[in-house]
Structure formats: C-alpha cells, structure tokens
Length: 315
Image (cartoon, rainbow, N blue to C red; front, side, top):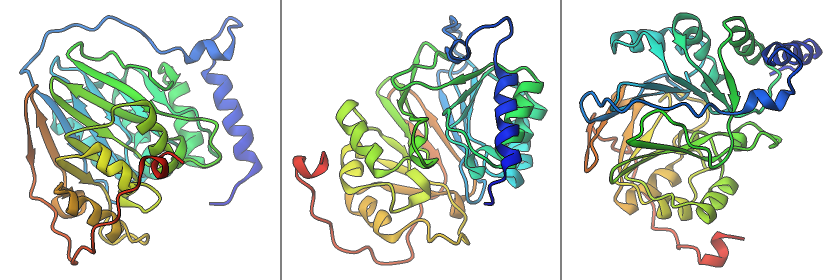
C-alpha cells in the first residue's frame, strides 16, 4: 500500500492525543492495568469463538465470570459482521480488545467495534503503521478516550482469576508487522489455547526457548502460511485441534499444503473458517467441545518431514 507523508504526521498526532495529560511521560500510559477481577463464574465454561471474517482473524472470548475479550476484528469489510456477531451473542461491552498487529486484516474491523461498543481498554502491539486504517484506529481510540496500552512479553491479562492469559510474544521494534504480533496463551484448568496471530518462524523458536507452548488447541499462525508453522513448533505445541482462519478464494495460497500436511501427520484435527464458517470452542477445566465439522484437505498430504535436532531447532 502506498505510503504518504501525511499518514506519518497523522499517526504522530494520534499518538500525542493518546498520551495522558498533565505532563506525564509517554511510557506512563503504557502500563497495563492490574485491577482486581471478580470471580463470579456464570457457567464454569470458557468460550472461544473464531469468527469467520474471510481472509483475516477475529476471536471473541467469553470468560467463565462473564468478562469478554476480542482479539482482532478482521478487515474493514468484516467490521459489520463482527459487530453483528457480538450483538447476537448478547455482548454490549467488551472488557478487553487486543490488536495483535496493525495489518488491515486484523485491525480493520475493530473500527466498527470500537465505534459501536463500550470498550474498557485496548491492548496493542505498539508496532506503528502508515495506513489510513491504522490512523483511523488510533483516532477513534483517542476520541472515545479508551485506555490504550502497549503489550509486554510475559504480561498476564487479569480478566478472570480462573483463566491465565499470558503474552508469549510481542516486539514493537520489528521492521515488519507480522513478527511484531501479540501471541496469547489461555490456560483454564488442564486446557491450553494458543492464539498465534501472524507470528513467524523466528518468533516460534524464541517462544519454544522461553515457554511451555504445548496446547490442546492452536489458532494456526498467519492463516496457514509457510512463513510460520515450522515443523519444530507444531511438534512442540502438539495440538489436538487447530483452527485455520482464511478465505477459500484468497490470493496467497493459504493454507499452504506443506503446513496442512504437518498437522495431518501429527494427528491434529483441523478446522477451517473458510469451510465451516464461525467456529465455537467451549472449554471446561478438563475438556473441550468444538461446534464445527473438521476440515478435510482436498489433496493427499506428502511424506512426514525429518524432525530437526535440538541444535537445528534453536539455531
């Protein structure tokens, strides 16, 4: 997309608007709220909704205590779909919006959501961008005075005392948007859900070094792209179920057949928003249920790839 100098100025002004008044330093506005969360569980279940937004990501989470989180919102055309989906789910306010990175297929639909719903706070990767969509995103946050925070690695989001939500990766200093992405891991009892956004293979290596990434459910990174989803990472996560979010008519070849084959040979059950539409995962502390038919690839997966050695994995 064409870069325009006016966008740089616009974004700079938008960031200034987001700064706290009274002469406080910029970094002071980036501290994440550590509020106390009530523990009045409503039904003892964690709901994770993978909304079909075509070629993009949007994930709605309803916690056992009733609090809500929206991770990304698809592109601008998807905004009305996401807003409608949330209203049908009985949502009137969102406790936490997470913008994993500033690509339009992740933040575009958030403009509609931020405009129509009461949003208590926004967590952002801190990675700036030069598009009109990104500038509009910052402008509406400033206009509605929504608390705006930059994610930090290892940070825990306090939304429900029974559910651990931790940032496993974010890097605002990356040159490109995808490797700057926020990666979240949700842990509820014995169940783990890894939301990998558009993170890349180099980030996967770092996460494997620093964290236990094993998870029952994985949101496949970058719509099933070859720039993510390394054999080593998929093997380490070892998901029972994996969700692919993409448009079946996309121009990128997503999901890449090699990536699909990696899950196939591992025995992971794949689900696809392109095939199944909206996918709802209901989680208790011991088990989960997925309300969708599995995705069956329309090709014969290739041979199992050689598993890398420990040295190869962490080079």
